[in-house]
Image (cartoon, rainbow, N blue to C red; front, top):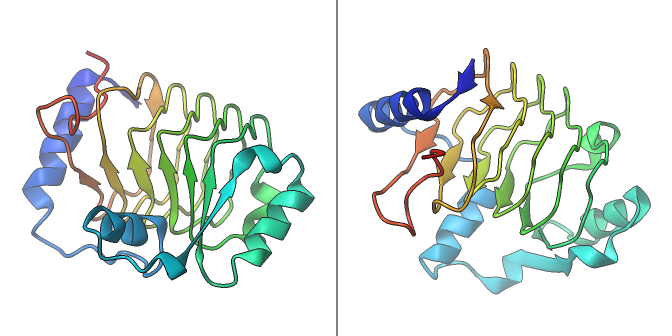
Length: 195
């Protein structure tokens, strides 16, 4: 199913209707958990390691940053990792965030990336087919032509402003158990519904 304006509104309303029926089990230390605390100014800065994504040009450098986080939430700010295949790196992943990163045409198929987050990041044409993305954070996401067929998006969170895109976002057979669409009506808290 391609999620269009009508389909997304239906999903959003369903998310609101069932948001209180079962409590989401957000992965502790996940991007969603830490960033939501940070929004409330309750996060200890010692729990976060932010790195300049422009300094990461190879998978080896990426793994070095991931290893250097030592249990902290790694936030990759910026950088262009377009075209990378993250599948082989799945065993090295823990909760982390990409903030304003270019991730066009990246591959995440079948990997386990629980606790990951994408904040104002460009994922155009990325593939997450069959990936485990529990507790994912999608904040002002740019999901144009992203394929999440069969992905596990349980306990995920989708919010942000109208600057993102969900044009041709494919989520056939994706698990959306306790997934929340937090969409307001203003420019700052609306969701990109490709008006």
